[in-house]
Image (cartoon, rainbow, N blue to C red):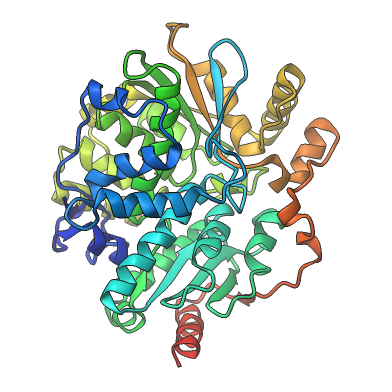
Length: 468
């Protein structure tokens, strides 16, 4: 399997090369040169298998030529063996057709663990084989950072520096990052919003000299391996509900577009996903696009669902590349226009194709609290604020055929957002035992201005200190 950049000016790579590179040198994102497709019999053969086995078999075509199925089986078994639920990603039925896919049984209580725990195994394998060391830099709006840190902490061939927006994550989210005191971990709180952090990370990758000096790599969803590692949980859920002999729909709370892109990729591989439903908070750029072809960036507004406080959704570029017929030049021009003007000129035909598959809705904070309250009253199951937007979207945008079940991606444990939970239902969900003392742990972080040169210097100091 080979991978190409969405902007067409970077050399093609194999899976291991994409894993270690993260972002393409031309600023684009890597995509498979061709899509693997599973026939119905192959999907059926996955039914009833343990999650780690499903994950290994689904990821295997993307790693072809770099990893054997046996190697992947060892990695997925190690990645998911420590999850707190035997099913890893259990389904909870909320009503006659709606099923919550609980993606929060990993070490940091968020869906990012499903990919990050596997990426830690993949990085170890590749770096040990090559005898190399990398510096991972990433931006987080809340959950990616803690999941990445947990996956990379104490690994001898990795230094990791995570940027988060100062004061714009929940306290639990922040502490899950800043209380990890491992020598190879550095947290930087940037004075700005998530898009500020994300722009800095992209700028570091675009700085050729710095990228080479630090041997930069990425574990957020600009890294294709992250997206590939998220596909299996949609497969597992769809199979449990009757696929491939029954279509399903999915509803996904969406910030950076990587999670729902994984569901789209599963569909591209032949899984019968009838509709992709996305939900957002007041930062509604993606619902605006799918509803009215309005991809116009506005100021980021803080909300009860901070992981979706985003206006520039990096992974949308991957979908755009496909919508434009894999025309890398057109993709690059469109992304430059968006960068320069804050508006994305998507041709009407391409937008109509997207709107035929995706539906989107936004929910403000008050609506989110009402939805948390409604779901809990009806089912005794409490969604976190992000998931609440997706249960709302599932109720309002499900396919017309009531026989089609809807899978809601439950992306975080409600205990990560205790203030919102208390406002919605009057109590603060308890953290699991392994995090019970989180609020008493020592924190370590560096507060920095929105200054790329200063942040690069901090990353350099961190990596050099550990390499010596």
